[in-house]
Length: 133
Image (cartoon, rainbow, N blue to C red; front, side, top):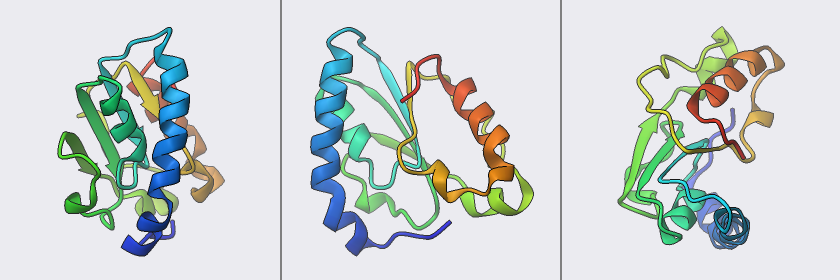
């Protein structure tokens, strides 16, 4: 998986937050999650939008290239996941430590994985929540 630098995140986060806010506002008009987990959260645009809409428990998963000081909110419980090793050994590590969340998000991350990782990634994603974006 390619790694993103600070310049990349800085160039796209405002648009990402706007999109996430529009989408989540619509969703949250019918569904009020108390916890959100984002697989491939980057600097936390979707989690930041969810927090601004009232969500209190935020968990973000991404690679070691994301630095906690880059996160858009100090409320994000950031967990480093070795997505790169997922491509070589078909595992995202032991994600059993993760709590189940009311809503799981995975936007623009799975396309970076080798097809052989699909079953494991979808399994981890679907175990994390009953509602997934």
